[in-house]
Length: 138
Image 1 (cartoon, helix red, strand yellow):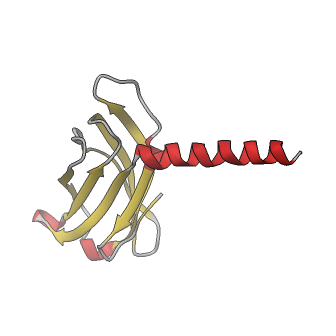
Image 2 (cartoon, one colour; image 1 turned 135 degrees about the vertical axis):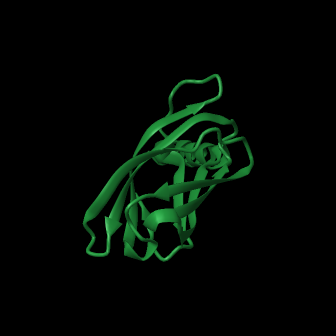
């Protein structure tokens, strides 16, 4: 019985190490600043440590207002995301001032496909951060 438990533990630890070595994808909401016509500019940093370039990466975002009510739903295209690089992408949220945003919810990843590869589940390897006043959550 002790041998079976030891073998199972070794398999679980080995699987954890394999996941850790694969790397991940970090999305950071770096800052929000007022844009033209009452829009809010959102600066995102993407750090791709997946071991391959992403030729498709689209996020569906829900922008919540000061009362926590969904103000907008939008899909933003951040591709391409080169391997082992940090990429800056700028998106404008029209019709809402930056100080009117209480939270940005990443509710879906519409596309996540490595170069010359099949669609993959990026939620499993995704890490979110925010340096802005509004948190970025999933």
